[in-house]
Image 1 (spheres, rainbow, N blue to C red):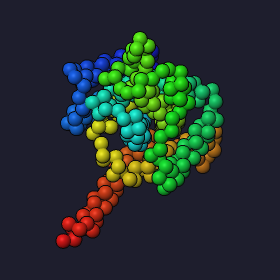
Image 2 (cartoon, rainbow, N blue to C red):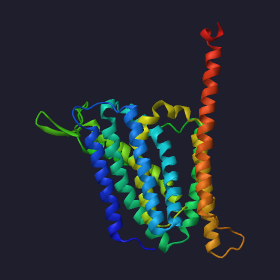
Image 3 (cartoon, helix red, strand yellow):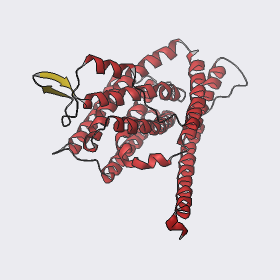
Image 4 (cartoon, rainbow, N blue to C red):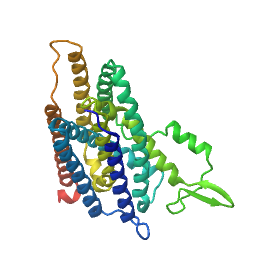
Length: 328
């Protein structure tokens, strides 16, 4: 089923309106920190919006497409949680004032969404012409899953290295020494310069695009419909900014999240290879239904999150018992 152009325009227009209202509400008056209560309300709102959109797909395109959307949305949202670790590191490295962090994330995520849109369009066109890419995507996801576990075991997943785009921006444009409010450019001694605010926005956006190198192939393993791929990415990214503030220090307690994400990537990688073999006429290769993918992805995230929180609670209790105060 080919989705008409007006559907893309309607979705993009609606998302832009929601983002504009979001930014206007948050940025009224003087810059201030994003509270936990605000973050909770907005996360609930964006999740409800995604559920509403999925319900609309169910009514207009059937349960199959709705199931693909929800599987893709949960996958992208789950993989985005891992991105938040790097976002914390970027914010700390560039010493972004907490009052401006929500704006940095918003602009960075919008940049990422635009770049992902281009990436998705190119990926969908390539898959239609070169079906062997499914094998490449599958192998890449399995490799990424193994690498994610290895990095976690070595404690390397929390590293941030400046990419080529960010290094080029630093060299190409004169930068002010410190922040000038929330401005991205400022005139200093008659010379127009960019501020660290622009640098960190580009860091967030370009880093998220690098994360898309595994998340986009992952969702193409669940659906080849570019409309579903784009909307699932859009709704997952929309709520990412508020999730950053809602989780806060909780991210440090999700010690098993990398293993869960690795399992999801590995599962989708195997699914891609099996379905490519099935399409090529290999009789023993099964075609994994979308309901099973949705169950595996959702179940994995619930189990790894619960196990992480239980471990954090046990470690905290042991720490209290072994402390001098607890011992007395």
